[in-house]
Image (tube, rainbow, N blue to C red; front, top):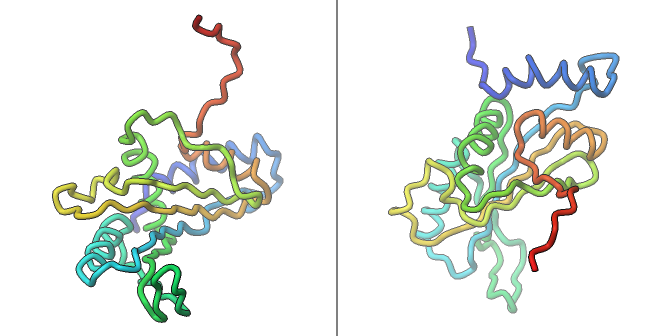
Length: 190
């Protein structure tokens, strides 16, 4: 018997039937699903080999697989950029690794953000969700003592949803902590 990630089990057992019921799908294959999660970060143009190695190590610890180092295509003098210089680091997760990363993001990493009130509800218009994390030390895999320079992460969750409403409902049922919109008219303090 093969291992099934916790969040995927939740998706199959609870999210799919809930979406079929609420959206009125005739077939369970119409239900939107996660395709991949892309994680990337930028690297300073003046970063040395040790910084690049540290960033790649930390990204591998967060994602669970080795990242790709992205290189510049041409020189841009204003940015002190040379051709073929390392400018970024990225990972694309699919399958069990994707489900495990999303579970750690939702259950462990996001709740550790100080004064966390939820993530924005805006999707990209095609059912995909982008979130920016300003400090990558929220992930438990990173030890703060080994971090020389803080970096941010861009996380893109790609779904098969046809529109933003489907994608938002899918992510909400998976446990994405969206911000609540204030609908009550609370009295203002004088």
